[in-house]
Length: 284
Ligand SMILES: Nc1ncnc2c1ncn2[C@@H]1O[C@H](COP(=O)(O)OP(=O)(O)OP(=O)(O)O)[C@@H](O)[C@H]1O
Image 1: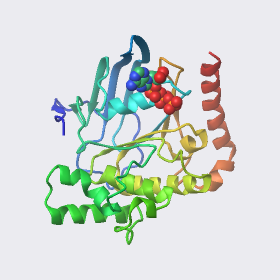
Image 2 (image 1 turned 45 degrees about the horizontal axis):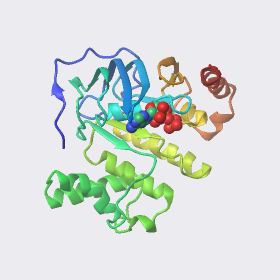
Image 3 (image 1 turned 120 degrees about the horizontal axis):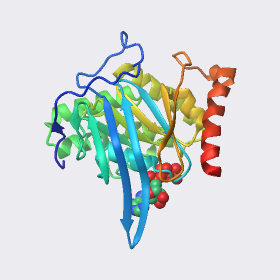
Image 4 (image 1 turned 180 degrees about the vertical axis):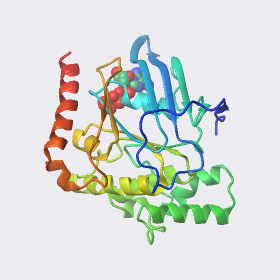
């Protein structure tokens, strides 16, 4: 693992109302995220692309935040920076009260659009893999991976290889792998985009269940406005490139969310507000 986050004095608690914490199993570590003045410019092969500009985010522990925006506005770039995988050109990311300067899987887990599992490893071995890299003893590795596979609804599928699993099951394995080091923050980059609609909705429900059960802070990127309104506490809307934050929409739909809510006027209003923002950016 390339370095750890640098301890800093505890960040002030972000004010933006966290969801009712009383029944939530909050992780012991703090999953707050604070981003200030973040910018990013790619410079490759003589081409300079300003991807992100003046990004400010303040996410309280345990919140479910969804990022939407026009194609190419820098959503994935922002997520890569929150994962410590890409260093921003300017600005600062503080996660759990520490400056994030490199990947730290104890703090931040990541799930990508493609499940990106190793085809020659079983589901169990795929989930164990990050623990093997860190030389966690075998018995503990086995137990932790089993627990996470059970959490994502895959008890009994531990010995299956990726080609023996459906698309939704592969993404469940990928989520289990993202959770296996029990980070307080989970980042997901369009994790259900490749799935059919029915599976996508049920995976959204699964993710909400896992989130409720674990109390993680979730940051989720999607192109689907329906998915955004269904899942989020807050939707962050980005402008066309260079991506800036142009709206933050609090989703006041009650929880648990239900399929029937998608047909309500409030749901339609939320979708409409986000769509107007994105369309005006794209028309830009
Ligand atoms: N490694 C890179 N090198 C150079 N330019 C890059 C690199 N990665 C992304 N970009 C550029 O930065 C901008 C933002 O890309 P990014 O993938 O973050 O956007 P996005 O909002 O996630 O896109 P999409 O919605 O289409 O997935 C784009 O113009 C892209 O071409």
